[in-house]
Length: 269
Image (cartoon, rainbow, N blue to C red):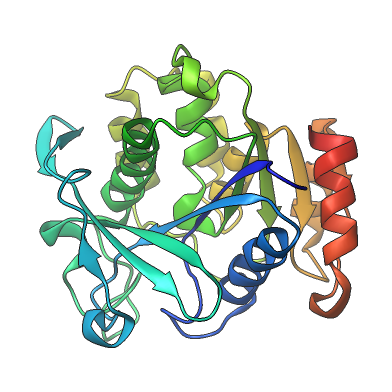
């Protein structure tokens, strides 16, 4: 993996959020690839529950300052960065006061999905891409973890399809089981994505409005898929098998490194 450029984008990441199947793997994979000599960039949303002082986040002025258009609204993009302790890796945080200041992640205190989760996901997707463009850092591999990161493949393949920075990039999606659909209004989500001139036929998987919808849209726009959950539900397994891209079966946390490296090098790149 020496000198390969891998962009890791995740909804959740330890140690900044509580440990889950997604957040743990989203940390361990870049750490191991970094140890093998890959060049790493990591992105996640700057949720309000993240303790900026404890994790030493600071704003990157040269990357902040642009506005992103979300459903005909100008939303300021703020970029913050922190170093992962002992690992010599940096994490970039996509921030916006309107979307990410609240002191919770995807739901309110009653467990109800935030009504603007759709806009937050679009903002996150555009924010990552625009930041990588500012960095002028062309990734060989873009690896997606988590439902709120799942719009990235769609936006890279459609909205940014003519951007030369990503012309050679290969997209890998780790598929996980989810107990939440992510958004409460799929019709509203589709309308907001269509505002960015993305065609109806690219959004059909959102019409099912199920817990797998975001994963399916990500997988449809991926060049390869990794099964991130040991027991993926039957619907998602069947969908992955129907896509016709390289697939890596579930690898346990204790022994995934060689399998992931080989998959990147032989099936993706």
